[in-house]
Every structure is written in C-alpha cells, then in structure tokens.
Amino acid sequence: MSWIRVDQVLDTLFPSRCLLCGQSGAGVGIPACAGCMIDLPWLEQQGQCSPALGLFAAVQSALIYEYPVDRLVAAAKFGRQVPVARGLGQLLALRMPALAEPPDAVVPVPLHWRREASRGFNQAEEIARALCAVRRWSLRADLCRRIRPTPEQSGLGAAGRRDNLRGAFALSNARAAGRCRHVLLVDDVLTTGATATAVGEIFQAAGVRQLSLWTVARTP
Ligand SMILES: [Zn+2]
Image 1 (cartoon, rainbow, N blue to C red):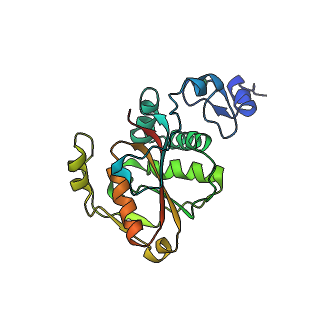
Image 2: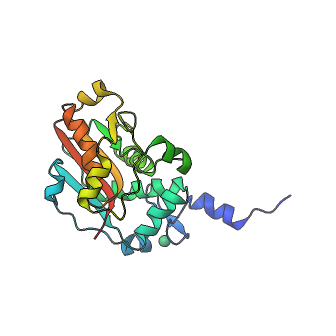
Image 3: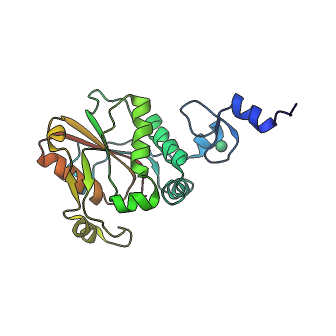
C-alpha cells in the first residue's frame, strides 16, 4: 500500500489554498485566508464618478492597485494563472454591493484575439466569470470584441489613451447588445477609464440606457 501524503489530505479538508500566502484556509468562494483578506488594501466604497467616466451610472472598484494586488494582477495577466484571475473575480464579488437592478449582461473588456491567443486567456473574462458564478448573472463575452490591436496604454496620458483606443472596439452582436437595459463592464484595473469608456460608448450607441463599471482595482 502507498502512504497518503499529508498535503493531499490537507487539500481534501481545505480545498482552497490562500492566493497570497499559500496556506490552506481559504473558504468556499473566498480566495484568501482570513488574515490575508483583512490585510488587503480594500477601497472604501464611494459613489465615485470622475468626469471622464460620466458615461457610467456607477463606477466601483474593490481594491487599491498597490502591493499585493499589483502582484496578483500581474500573475493573472502575464503568468497565465487562471485561478488567480478567478480569485480576483471572487474578491470583486465579495466587495461589491447587491444591486437592486441586476445587469442583463456582464461584459468583460475584450482583448484583441492576437493578444488573447498569446496570453492564453482574457483575464477580464475570467474575473467576470467568477463574478457571474457568485451573483448568478449572465456573462456575455460574445457581445463585443477588440477589432484593432492597441499598444499598451501604460506610459500614455489621458488624451493619448483616448486616441489610442479610437475605433478599437466593435459590437459582435448588435441586436443582443441593443436588447440589454443594463450592461455591467468588468475589467481588472481602472486607471483613466479610457478603455472602459471606449467600450461603453459602443453599447450606448446600440441603445443601452444603463452602463456600470466594476473593476477589481483602481490606481491610487
Ligand atoms: Zn493567506
């Protein structure tokens, strides 16, 4: 007979290990242990809406984009770690308020197919997938796509980001998009909001009346 390994027993008792410290003890639907959850740089909830994001009825983020959130986002994005992206989506689901009017469609900000192919997945889509699993909302990654690859936004100012994104997105299913009353866009990090605004504008043009934006983190 073979011995049962202790770590396998632990994985059975505590199926989820903490995303941050690697110890067991993360709960069902909670990606980190209690100690690490408390230490995360949570954002105080505000009805924050900068003028540049006037398109959205609500803009909310769960965390401040600083250590260790920046490491988690990088691991999801560049380390091809789908479970980390899903864990970020669980953090978002835990932090965000209940909505009186749930969205008809949850839309992750799309990556250009070439970047998605090289990265293996779209981290925003995995974040939105975990959010939708918790809230039982409808994930609609099929409604819009990035038709033009855009250089990385980092290093560009607000105006540069807007120019960089002009014509970058298009609806793939205009009829389905137009039937939505409330579309919730989901992304990993909110910086200037130029990307989300570029996506939101095409839904607004399709007749969607209410747009919201939730991101896992926002830059301080
Ligand atoms: Zn931990």
